[in-house]
Image (cartoon, rainbow, N blue to C red; front, side):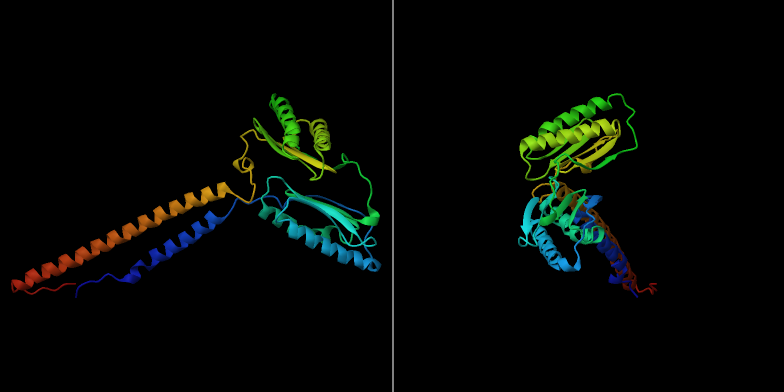
Length: 316
């Protein structure tokens, strides 16, 4: 009996190809995981809404709904919700290098976080790595200094290279002028250091420059030679990092206007690699099929020749 090629024999290879293709599609569509949702700090007043001020709670809910709806279109939005008796004022702001989609995701996570961390507070602020929200009930609004220190972190690790302070000072000077030219946001790379500065969206250029200068001065004096630091004032923040092995690629790419060219490039590369791999496997499969078919043909041809000679043969 002649042997035949069984289609089911290709099933394991087919399943492997499908699984590999699925993984590649997932990888090619996945963007670099952002840390914009990392919690930084919170400020919550001890005064809270009571049952008698349920209208404030309803107004606060409406306030958050408005912020979330605007976060897919704007990176800074300031509003007042409610009437004179139950008004709530506040704003949200996303980091300057977040695209609209990431800004929306960041802001969407804040209302629930505020309810958990600042439950019923009449005034609260939560800062994530990529965005922040601040609100106040109108009757509790207080005058604050733009330069009031809200949060500061200095890395415990210290620089050991002698040129650190020179690099830091040059990077700080660059971002100090760049934040004014960049409409309130600047990311400055200098050597092995990266500095980010951003001002509150409605802060004027002069006030923005003064605020960032104050934040940089705090970082210089209080963080010293720390490899990284963050300083948040009421109306601006600065963040810096020194990378002895080079600034990581994920910190070098801007993400603006909802585009992610690097993600597209990765998708193209991975997709091309997948196509080549699948094509190679299919080529091997077809080649093996061809060999098996050639073997069957030769075996049948030999059988016919032997039978024509009148001899008996048993084909196993």
